[in-house]
Length: 416
Image 1 (cartoon, rainbow, N blue to C red):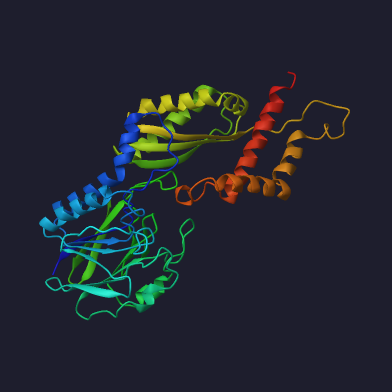
Image 2 (image 1 turned 120 degrees about the vertical axis):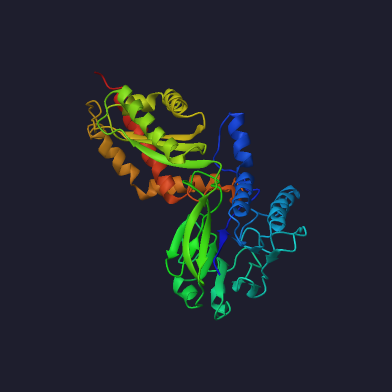
C-alpha cells in the first residue's frame, strides 16, 4: 500500500528565545508566537496532504509547565489531527522526560505515547506498519536504547523512533548514544530520530534522519527549520523531503571588507549581504547577526563609532525588507600593523602589534579571561545559555577583540 507520513521532532513548545534584544514590539510578538505557529503549520500541512500518521521524536515541551497553557495548545492541535483521522505517535526526550513533566492532560485516543520502561511497538494493521520506540524516563539517558529495540516484523513497514545523539554532535548533550550501524542492525525501513536541531540524513537507504527542530530558538540555530514528509511505496521509502515551517528565520553571516577603503563601498557590501539572506528566506521574517571582518583601512572608523555603524546596518536591512531585524553586530576587522611612536623605552620601541599578539596568545591571559567568564556564567540559569556563548573560542575571540581595540586606539593617538 502507498501512503505518506510526517516525521517531526524537538517542538520545544514554551521554549524561551535566547539572545534577542530589540525594542520593536512587532518582533517581540512574532518571536513569542513562533514555535506555536510552526506546530500549527505542521498540523495544517499534515491534514492538507492527507498523511496517514505523524511521528514526534521527543522534546514536545521545553521543560515542566509553569501553567497548562502550552499543554492545552498541544492538545488542541492533536485534536485537529484526531478529527482528521491522523494518529500521532510520541516519544519523550530529555526535555520532556517522565521525570521532568510532572503534570498531565488527557490526549486524544488516537495519540500513542511510548513507554519509558522498555521499548514497545504500536501497529497500524491497515497499513501493515509497525512503529518501535521508547521514551526517556529521566533527563539524562546514557545507555544505548537502540540495542534493545524489537526485531523487524517481516512483511511490515518497520519504523524506529528514537531520541538520541547518534554518532555524537558538538553542542548537543550525549543522550541515548548509538551508532548508525546499531540502527541498521534492526532491519527497519525508516529511522525517525530526534534531539539534534539541524536537519541531517545519516543514512540514505534505509533513511536515518534527524528532521531538526520546527523553529530555531537562537542565533546558534540558523537556517530553515521544519519536519520531513516520507512517501512509502510497495513497502519501501520511495522519497522524502523537508517541510519548511519556521516563522522566524535566524541568520548569521560575515561581510569581508578586506581592502575596502570607502564607507560607501562597505555599506554597499553590507546591503548586498542582507539582501541575499532576505531572498533566501523567501518571505519568512529574518533575525540576523552580522560580522564585519577583513583587513581594511576602515578599521579605525568602524570601531570608533560602533553605534553609527549599527544604525547604518539597520537602515540597510530596512531597505531590503520590513521583515528583518538585527540581533547583533560584531566588528572584527583589523588593519595593517603599525608601530607606536619612538620612545626612549626599549619596550615602547617594539612593534606594538607584535607585543599585543604575544599577549593575546598568552596562556596566562586566556586562563584569567576564562576565570572571569566563568564567574559571569554562574549568574545565568544553565538552561538559558546558548552552547557557544561561554565556549573557549568565544573567550579567545573576546581577547582578540580587545587587541584590535588597542591597535585602533594607538593609531588614533599617533601624530600624522
